[in-house]
Amino acid sequence: MLEIQGLRSGYGDITVLQGVDLTINEGEIVGLLGANGVGKTTLLKTISGLLKAKDGTISYLGNNLLQIAPDKLLGLGIAHVPQGRHIFSKMSVSENLQIGLDGVKNRVHAAKQLEYALRLFPRLKERLGQQGGTLSGGEQQMLAVARALVTQPKLLILDEPSMGLAPIVVREMFQAIRQIASDGTTTLLVEQNAMAALHVVDRLYVMDRGAIVYKSNQIDERELEKIKEVYLGIG
Image (cartoon, rainbow, N blue to C red; front, side, top):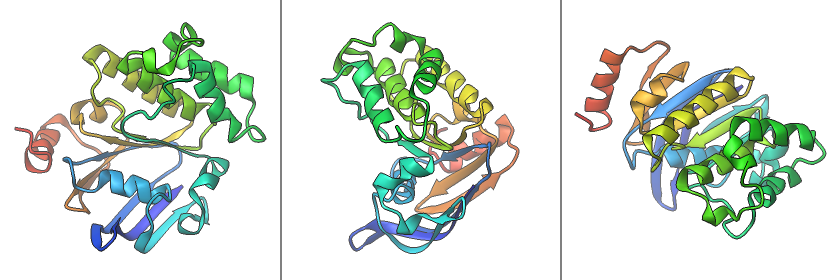
């Protein structure tokens, strides 16, 4: 579905990504781990067209993403939930979800997608008229993911969805991510919570200093402990 080869990208004269290769097959949850500052968010921004690549290719269902404007990605079925939630705090939950639908109203069945998102995150259904900024941190993250889901994405990109959440909300979030994948949405999951990610991903990549330094189709908890110590700085 998504194939990245030799990708180099960065900010101005600074090159962050040093020739990244990464593949995501349809129906998978692919995890991307790495410590802060190794290039994970830079990679996602380049996939989404928010940063211009210096070299390499990004192919998505036969489309060259490097030639497609960021505002066209929803139409292709790519939804990106960035780190930090980025909801519209002064708008209601319902209005936030409607904004997601506005970009794809000719492609999806609005009522069906709203029902699906609210079934995954029932707390939001109880708060449809509430301003986004008054929600708890966990509820705001749910809203950010739900706003992406109403677009009926083929590829869902999640950047640190568990960041800053209480353990019980982290469990709820990862249960939802597992269900989303089970329902057929391919997912790229960027996480620092390595143990939580392990339990939902089909395959795993690890980044360090702008490059993929490890990949695995099967990984056990002993191997994960080595990854955490060597690449994530977690003893």
